[in-house]
Length: 196
Image (cartoon, rainbow, N blue to C red; front, side, top):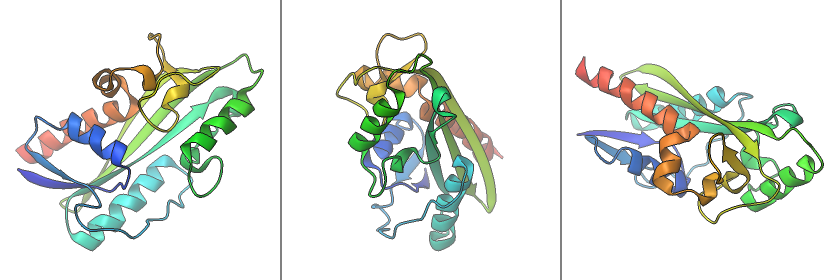
């Protein structure tokens, strides 16, 4: 069993990751599990850069294996916005309801509703840095659908499905989501690292 810190204070993300890692010999620790309460500024202009900043901060301060993610919703009709600013699209402090309302307002009347969710994960382990990425293509709905999920899930319908992420069974969402895909790549990478 190895201990791995997930540099996130987002309880929804931690719960998703614990579900994805349930069958693995990994003890997943959240920031609250290690009593970390200091905010880590996300000042990079890329998802990869923000994931690195968070993972590096925790790894340097705890000397533990650590990973962090950053996720962005990239909408074609908005030139890729909100992108790296997805969490604070409607300003600080972050508010998912306001973010979704701003997105719906900006998408009003737009015919092209294509979008993608993209997650970048940075893993720092044994002094080495590794990156993993996952994405899912889909479209922005005209109105919110579903009560589950978080963030923009109620507005995003992945290609090939009739429901938004927020209206899906959580296990199905995890199996096809951007974060799920990035995590699966990381877990494959972890397996290789642990077997060396």
